[in-house]
Amino acid sequence: DAKTTQPTSMDCAEGRAANLPCNHSTISGNEYVYWYRQIHSQGPQYIIHGLKNNETNEMASLIITEDRKSSTLILPHATLRDTAVYYCIVRSYTGGFKTIFGAGTRLFVKA
Amino acid sequence: DVKVTQSSRYLVKRTGEKVFLECVQDMDHENMFWYRQDPGLGLRLIYFSYDVKMKEKGDIPEGYSVSREKKERFSLILESASTNQTSMYLCASTHQGADTEAFFGQGTRLTVV
Image (cartoon, rainbow over all chains, first blue to last red; front, side, top):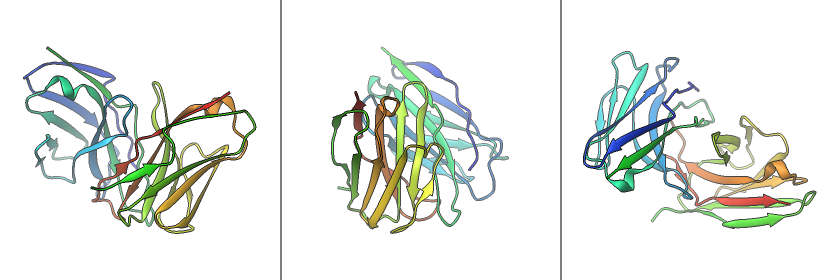
């Protein structure tokens, strides 16, 4: 599975868009990009995923570059409750499957 | 509502004890995973299983074993608990395939004294 690189921490003002970048330069053609977040003392929560097209759901948007070597998670109107650690991961099916998490980005949303 | 349930939220064990952490999912998922989470290190994969009685080592399997006798249950075993195994343990499950999200349990905070 490809490894990912994310900034350690980011700040965002409440009500503004939060843009969280992720590099996955060794991603291969069958690997999906997933985003999860973890609020303190809880298990990670799924946000969104994509293969090569941009995706949007009720929580966020995912922008994947054309070469698929990087992506950006966008929280369009960040709230204080979006303060969490955000993980970008890539995964592929290989008969079995494993999901490798990096250290993630700690997002602080400030009033 | 989908559920991944871990048997204990908090656990305190003594050094040298054999410890069982249980995880049950009710979504008929093929894949199940055990991670540990430590401050500054993110989630590290210990073991995973993609079918009953199948298991694969993750990145940090040393000191751990697993058991998957039934599809819905995946157990993590610490054969002889040590203080460096004090951690938060998270179980997850997914359907087979790359295009499916993972569901996580609430975590077990294990302290080995």
